[in-house]
Length: 473
Image (cartoon, rainbow, N blue to C red):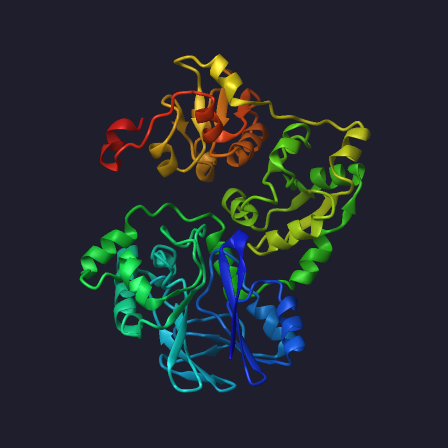
């Protein structure tokens, strides 16, 4: 028996490879499937099944392409209604892989079709669960994503999730291994642990949602409390996962077309494409194509693209670090952005040499901010609200990057204002968005809140959440 977790950090997503006696299964595959095919060929394994725990919202799964390339059927749990051929399994139905057995446990709540797959070993013992977004480490799946499709409230779905956990998962042995679909950093839950594998017994001790004495009413309140709006791209990814999509190889081939400055400019103008600059923030700040949006390839790239670009069908042109153009296109495709039109050959230098216009972002060190500091200096903190409450400059307004387009009216139209975040990554993204909207009176603070503290600027410490409403403007 071989079980391997294939974890993709930028998506905080776990796919799983299972093999036994020459037969294999993949659970929740990533969109680019060739590495799975190559691995099985190397191991002498025939792919027998592709299991999907649910219709994913935060990434485009590779199930459709993998099935087309291998002939292996796709398996969903009860109530799933995909637009392509698939096995819709019954609750309790079993599937054999070598001398292993996969048992279907229908666990609705995150979505109605959500299913946990129980792996039973060759001796008939429950060995592991692949829990999808039903059970995370330290948390459970948010119950607000499938309301419209299920014609239910988030409270109704949370109630179903409570029942699923208590009747299908918690009765299992404490020794059962939990393999979730996501870890810390995913927007599919609130309080996920950084670990990616644990035992069910330990989760019963540390996961708030698995408290033995928890009532359904308490569960519903705790699971639904503090949920932030989901990223805009989630419904579009669900649709792609449910209805199908292009082969990722076609997307990459089209998206990695080399464009010289003239061609790049022409495509940008005729297609009204978004220019996405994926270089590091320091390099970006010194010169970029005007109205570019900056998201560094070395940050949480794909989730930020999904959160900030409203429509996955948006045409996109790329400015990338040299040699990483295909990586950019691939990672965009993982969250459904398939309309990449090409990249600026040679990066920004040929653009400058061609005499094309560039823009910059003024960036200062915290020490310089300290020298300019006055009581009424306009300062904006683009971190999450919870971060802002716990530690911030006293005068800083909170305008979270996730929802910056909803806060545009709050920024001064003419007076110079300053932006900071935790490290400088999010504030540079915010700077690029604001500049693309015509705000050129901004200055970004290098190094974020840590640098601000180190410079001796006063920082307000933790504020009890019970007093938040009276403090927030």
